[in-house]
Structures are given as C-alpha cells and as structure tokens.
Length: 217
Ligand SMILES: [Fe+2]
Ligand SMILES: [Fe+2]
Image (tube, rainbow, N blue to C red; front, side):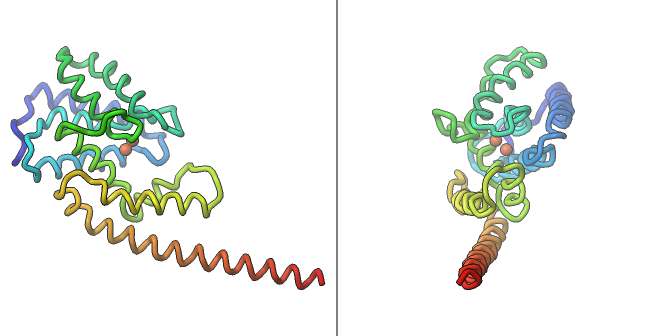
C-alpha cells in the first residue's frame, strides 16, 4: 500500500518548518546528527510505501523528524524518548491545533526507545522504530554507535557488537528486514573482523605481559 493520502500544502509547509528546526538542533549532536534524522526519515518513507498497513504520511514524517529531539543537550540519552515526546508536543502545539495528531506524533517519539513502557503499536510507530534500527546497521551505524561512548575500547566494541547483532532481528516488518539485509550482512562482516582484531590484540597483550615476566626473572 502506498500512503493512505497525500499531504496537504499546509502540511508540507509544516514539514519544511520541522526540517529547519531539526537541522538547527541536531547539527551539533555527535552520533545523532542531522544526517541520522534524515536517514531515519528516508527509511521511514521507504518502509511506509512497502507495507500493507495504512500509513498517514504527515504523522509518519513528523515523528521520524522529531524522534531524537530528546537527545539534544542530553548526551547519555537514557530517557530521550520520554523527554523528546514532551518537547515534540510543545513544538508541534506551536504549529498545529489538532491535539489528536500531536499525540500520535509524540507517541512515535516515546515508543522508538526501549525506555518506553509500551512498545510501538501503530504502523507509524513501528516504522520509525524500524527505520531508526536500520540506521544502526552497517559500518556507518557501528561508527555512530561508538561515538562519544565512555569505557575501554574492548568493552565499547563488545557492547556495540551485541546490540548490532540483535537489531536486525528486532525489526517489526519483513519489508524492513528486506531493506536492511545488505546492511545486516555488512554488520556481520564487520563483527567478524572486529572479533578477530580484538582476539589478536588480547593475544599480543598476553605475550608482552609474559615477556615482562621474563625480564623480571
Ligand atoms: Fe533515539
Ligand atoms: Fe535515532
């Protein structure tokens, strides 16, 4: 199914306004920069066009554009879904009066993260969840996930590997899995290479430690 309707001229103007808003806000946001927002938006449209569920294009695009707004000035971002939902409501209320539509958009924002009490329900919520996960796959997704993280390199990489391996299988729609298949393969290749490098590094460290012991004898 293609989208259930076309966006009105007024809605297109609102979308342009939101794009300007998120471009300004996300420009200085490390791993969740403007390019991530636009990629999630692009994936959302692609999934929305392929699935059978009825999808409202305006609600979907607004939700995709604002999904990470809670990350602004909140680097660790644990509750960025909840925070982002209230920021979304505040911002959208300055643009439109329709509270029902605003609630549908803010639910996309809160439900795209695991900190939401309720997982995605509406098609638009599931789509943005999937689109966000698709942009975590592949080399770029891996690099994005590592940016700004604290801890030892080994810990960060192992943590990312575990999360990236799970992402593909958590996608809601089979259409999302089809879109993400080449990126999932890229992730698997990267994980194989990373694991090999980590093992080699650990072996080398062990060797130099033994060497140190020999020197002390
Ligand atoms: Fe997010
Ligand atoms: Fe995101």
